[in-house]
Amino acid sequence: MLAVIAQLIELRFFRLTTYEIISAKVRKGFRIALVADLHGFSYGKENERLLAAIRGAAPDLILIAGDLIVRKRVDSYESMAAFAGELPKIAPAYFSFGNHESRAELKIPEFAAFAESLQRSGIVFLRNKAGKITVNGDPLTLYGLELPLSFYEKRKEQTLPESFLTETFGECDSAAFSVLLAHNPAYGDDYFRWGADLTVSGHTHGGLVRFPGGRSLLSPELTFFPKYDGGHYQQDKKHLVVSKGLGTHTFHIRIFDRAEVVLIDVKSPS
Image 1 (tube, rainbow, N blue to C red):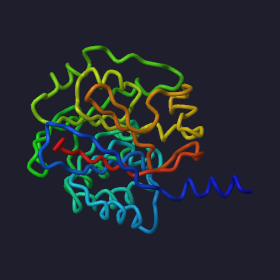
Image 2: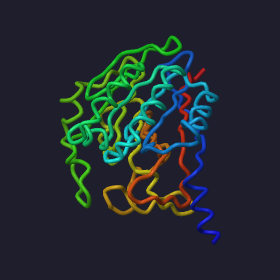
Image 3: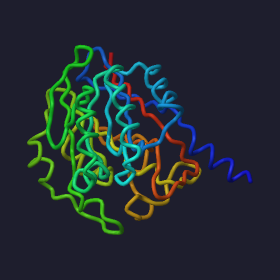
Image 4: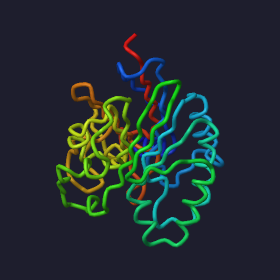
């Protein structure tokens, strides 16, 4: 009985998780809110609890790292569009597709209206392209990576070609603080090598089942003990932040794996 109650709590509540990054490339600094893998979930009527939490966090920039929807749950497209449409009223919002959006675009006729609604609301799509913006006076370069769907196949580990990111975006901008939205964190080593100051990902849902101490059991591709399953990782002065997501699909399980909105405070050394 206690296990059932614990599971209900894990599936109905979320937390705010905050990470801090220090970079000499910023002066005033800024706060990013990372939203990933909502998958049609609703926290309160019209997602009012989720929106209130994001508003209360006062982000300067909102990044959506994919999978707002479940491809086949067309009935949730309208509510997800309504939720996402509120985000640009809080802060500039940028969206990079996850595997569910990429598949929906190919197979679900209703997806076109969903995507159009998001863009009308002011959300900027980054689909294998870059954009330069200024946040609190600090210049940023944003990159949105949309991997081919072959990189999401179950029980099949793919290798990202060494030149893939460079061929997609060119060399990473080293002058401004650079942020890469990359839904699938399995290629975290490649993201580090390419050189973005910060990469944000989702997709793993935290591994669904996490052991005390933080390691997860299974990736969405059904590989055991994924390397980048949720949290903040660092190599040299480069950072990868992987959200544990806000929703689930197919396997509605979260054990020691609370859903989350991630806040990333990027600060100057001074």
